[in-house]
Amino acid sequence: MKYVGIQTQIDRNNRMSILLLLLFPCILLGMVYVFIAVVSYLNGGYYDNAGEWVSEISWNEVNMYFLGALPWVVIGVGIWFTIAYFANTSIIANATNARPLERRENPRVYNIVENLCMTCGMDMPQINVVHDDMLNAFASGINKKTYTVTVTTGLLNLLNDDELAGVIGHELTHIRNRDTRLLITSIIFVGIVSTIMSLVVRMLFNHMMFGGSSRDNKRNGAGAVVIMLVGLVCCVIAYFFTLLTRFAISRKREYMADAGGAELCGNPLALASALKKISGAPGLQDVKREDVAQLFIIKPHAFSGGIQGFFNSMFATHPDTAKRIQVLEQF
Image (cartoon, one colour):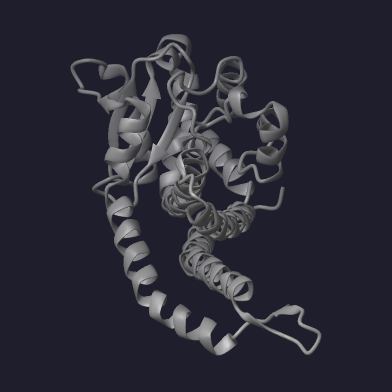
């Protein structure tokens, strides 16, 4: 694997974060424009000389409605993103049932984190714990005030000190490389599009189940169903493109974090041994969200099977665990 310096990786992730910030709004605005254009096509047109109805798009009308909707979309998404971006720590903590770990509860963990932070010259992050027998660790946060390393009780009970140091070193490297900021940006925007899709599907379902029964209501309802179906298709397309942006989050960041963790703990084989143990039961029992699972040190088995697993693997941000272990064993 070609060596990439930490500062180079940080600069690359900063550029990627900016690109993501620009790309996601473009996807959302594109979705709105396509929706307006399709609705205009369905509603607009004229009868030709043969008496046949010819559908036609009035681009002036489309542009007018789009410009009218533009400020509301930008303001709405901007407020949503700002709240989620700065509340990400509490959001992730609630999603994973994590809580702050005090020194008196587990001095062992604090000593390991402090020693590693002194080794690499970084400020000590918040340490959280999740009471779960599964094996997991992840880093989160967007700045020094919110940087957090979270571990499970299962991980603390199973790993020895060297293995735990390797895992924590891996997570600290994610923070140093600013991977967490990049991931949280992706998680928030994918969550926005997912929520819009859920709302459209729910509106469509409710209309089909509880729509009016009169002839006029049925006719008007049919038009509303068509419009909502168009909106649903636009949402699906937008969501697909947001998944594509996961390719921008290079899988090399995991190799970089492994290399950083091995360097900090001074024992690559210890981290390799930890990954082998974690691969037996990764994840968290109460977490079913793919976006949150992106933060985990190893992708949980729950997201690996079936059709969803196939598509998730296409856009996976984690390389194969066996390959990661093989690389570490070659140090």
